[in-house]
Length: 359
Ligand SMILES: Nc1ncnc2c1ncn2[C@@H]1O[C@H](COP(=O)(O)OP(=O)(O)O)[C@@H](O)[C@H]1O
Ligand SMILES: [Mg+2]
Image 1 (cartoon, protein in one colour):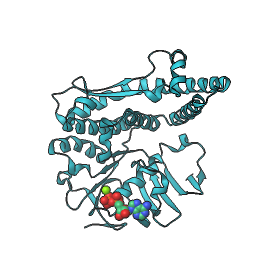
Image 2: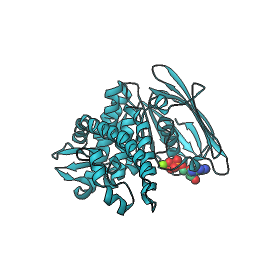
Image 3: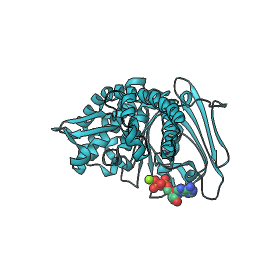
Image 4: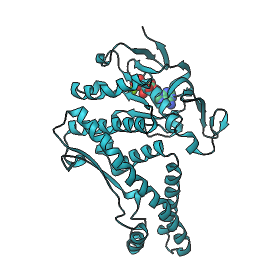
């Protein structure tokens, strides 16, 4: 699949942009603060309906304007036309001119994997970062998973609100508890199935990046040890004291380890960086493996930050994406881009919210 056309209106620093993209490799070049990352952000938004910068839509509206529009033509087995409009008063998402009613029908139209400096939080940050990574991978492979996550989040919120009240509404609590159990058990089941399938891709990627003498591992540590319903019931008195739900997949951990030791606590900076790139490469490889075509790769500035060894590890992935007529968008400042990428690059100059073909 590839993004054939991108249209932006009042998105970040783009007043209007209409651009065609061929399959293959696109290098977005330009000084800082010109709008390179904003393009990747728009493409990621089309794929996931979120910003990879972790901000809400209001921030993506061009300053002084009411709403943004992001449109795309995507060529896959068939071609799809996506239109996203967002303003404080109106949100609109259409696929081939039809309103999208179920997100499960939409996600999967464009699959993307982003590499950015924020990714380091995947190893260094709290468990929620790793859960989000696993959840994204699950929505990219099982779109119905998103509905389950939402059901769980709603039940959790409602339940926590009840637990905060002075007088407990037992009947309401029981209702949300059973909703929490049913959605939660399904989430646990899917995470437990996905992670072991994903691990070999992560291990192979780590090996490519480091030429490793080290052993890399990723393992799932669910907060629920055996039976969600039983463990919830057991936590009832503690729940009343703490006034929140203490057990469930919202407390899961995904342990990333190098040589059997938690990377979060013990890995060097270099090892953490390798681990993060390995996880992202593995995400791309896993998606290619499942869907038979590579996702669009969005690589924000990171090539410049990598040493030669790690760059060399990432290259085969980029070349493979290229060979399968996938698409790669990579940003770099000035001429600080990896020359070893070869000649078959489409170069773009980004300047003050405009994109021009570079010679
Ligand atoms: N909502 C917005 N409205 C208008 N301009 C914005 C908005 N958000 C960011 N910008 C501008 O976008 C530019 C940064 O774009 P970015 O894509 O991050 O740059 P870079 O080329 O360094 O990747 C800055 O000039 C910033 O002021
Ligand atoms: Mg940038």
